[in-house]
Length: 206
Image (cartoon, rainbow, N blue to C red; front, side):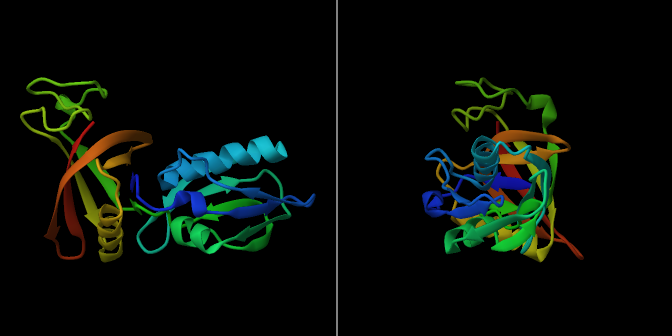
């Protein structure tokens, strides 16, 4: 799973949430630039606004090859009302009688499983890196790069292509490596055709 920062207008997203005591409107904060930023911002807002024991159930394979996320509200009977931007950028829907909020199409994401290579050369992000090291800031200072290999369906590859088209520059992404999210900068991407899946190789630094 990979989620990139995008140039989309995240500030235009609106979701009205009602726990039965009247609707309140969530608007993403100014620092939201990606789907996972939006998920974290919405979760914090739910807790602060309603005092709800909301929790992030986890990230899941969403629709159209994209990543999704589910927020457990801790009780039933909730209602959501979404605008067009929330539907387009998050896959949010207008619904009632809810005990969770599903965001099933995060813009700038692909649900393809990620296998990470080059871990012997992995270091935490730092201002610079010497030969044989990998760093997100600045990229290109290493003799070679760590790589990601994604086994992607046609939908997952299309989602990745869409994510790369709308990505901010420099391209910053979070990848799910097992149970751990890691932040990387994304370089060259190449695609190879398999019998059923496409192999997508991504050069990264991080």
